[in-house]
Image (cartoon, rainbow, N blue to C red; front, side, top):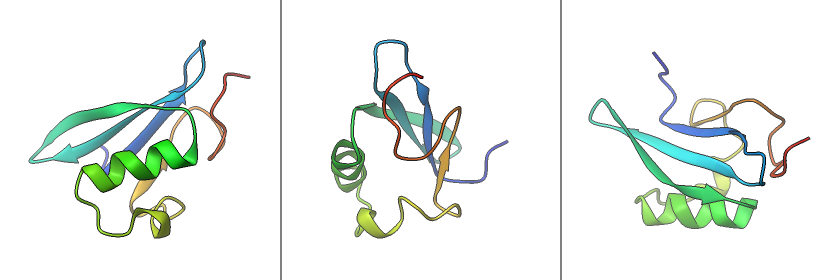
Length: 74
């Protein structure tokens, strides 16, 4: 089980990465991000007070299936 509250999933074939947040033991999909800006907007909407400071913090965000800040499929 993932203990990090925010997951940025692997890039999709068409580009972008699904973003999910764990709340109350359930994963909630926030949307498909195509940039750091999209990720920050999703996290602000989810109630995170200062998302710009946590997107590179592995205690908060797990980047799966690709390098952090890469939004297109390889």
